[in-house]
Image 1 (cartoon, helix red, strand yellow):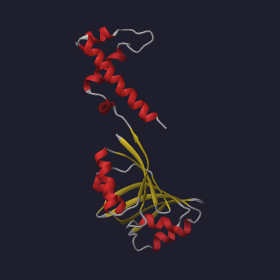
Image 2 (cartoon, helix red, strand yellow):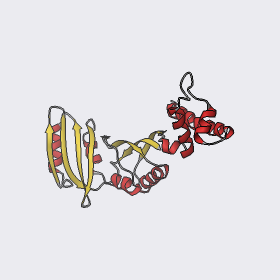
Image 3 (tube, helix red, strand yellow):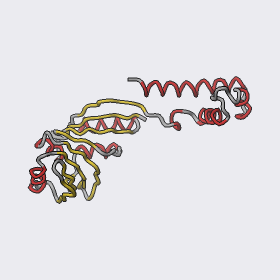
Image 4 (tube, rainbow, N blue to C red):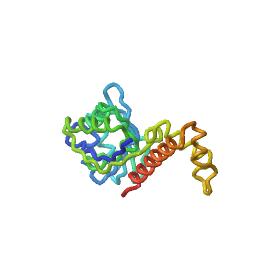
Length: 211
């Protein structure tokens, strides 16, 4: 399944938290949780900044913030929960049906996120960002492979049997003929099955490991 690292600029659109981060450009915001509640977003955010008092006053004075609570604070960090209107950046995610992995990082208006989803959903997500005129950058794209997606059911059956019977041990504990008998197919079909399964596994490994 595709996995992307993406940067999204929430400052030019309706995203109060992104806009707030531009007022504290040196602060590092870490979004720990986001929960939609009655057309609003309940969020928990950790902010690393030496200007914690100024930041808290900004939350207190902002008319966009319906409620807030400082959970913890120290010399360099504020942990705060609050409720604001649903942002356009969150709406784009929800419209594409993509769950957000936490934490999401935010600095000077730009969210940095890792998203794993199907190719169709990722394409729908970028379409939503384009339609809303939300600037974004794809920083990296990789492919993660689940065994259920990488191999067919028959190929997975071969790989499982080969490992269980010691085909890949050194020295081998069984032959390809033995596996053919175990899976009740002829030797020629077994050879093709082995080749296709191993080819998929090797290609997936090289693709994932490539710099």
